[in-house]
Length: 430
Image (cartoon, rainbow, N blue to C red):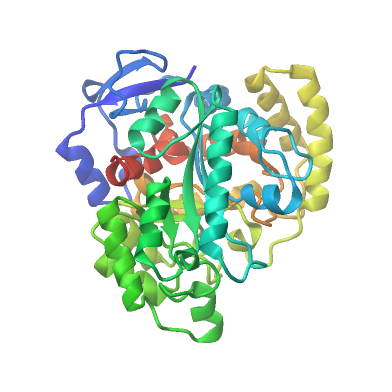
């Protein structure tokens, strides 16, 4: 059973986030500052609940998968609503053609998913009206699956959901074009539960210039005057500013203007894969200095220059893993141990190995510390992913790889979910 903890929030802890250093993997939270308590306890203060950073497993090499299912795992970007609307997928079933759904998230040990509220390119007008329908759909799911799923609007609701053993959803909007140049639309998004806004998608809008337009089309406009109002308005509302997809000029405008933490919900490292969607070292440092968060994207195109196609490799893996799953049933730890044994013995020489994803996490940790990085898969966003990471059942492999890289239990818990929860609590606690 997952464990939660009541933190005694100290000045020193906050300084750890504001004053980052490359040695932050050595930081420890003392036992005097934590009190482990059962997830279902009625005596918890849900506004201060977090996952335990006190070590529980003495042998991580042996217990990596136990750690994974014990930790709070958060994914800060997923596009499942797109195949639901465009292809008729069912979020409650194990869909053969989606990378995620309720069944896959449970098998993968995911606890919190941020759902992308996004307008596909085929829709040229009425973006705000379209996203209202997406939010309606999320609310319908929350009602339909109320015994197992909770859509949260703030940190307290999120902790209450986790405390009751539910899979929790948050909403994050992708692309400021849906605001349609009206501050009242931004406020409506907030009032309906959207807790981050990606200021642009690939196309520029009334708020700012996108990374694609700045890089490929010479659009160096940055934030517009309306965009500056949006940044100030989001700070006031308690809404996270997401700079994934944002042009670099606009990025630095946001850094100058924002009074709160900045996040990149699904981005990678430019120095490892020089794509316009990725973050430079200086951008990574600026996000960390703001006390923010970077969710590493699983898209091979952002992880590796000239990434190889992984579909054939993944089809082979999925076929063999299905046989292993039949053997172990609901014993997810044993299933993942056997699955990992198979993957290790049957490594592919092509495609993109999952180690490349871990390289991006490693890079950010070494540059600014362990407190600012997490997972932002971009599953179901028309992406192809590393060989071993073919869908949402595969999150446990990330934990195993982090153990093999020498990360401590405390650090792994931070990467899997605590880093985002810390930022979410700071900004979205109303």
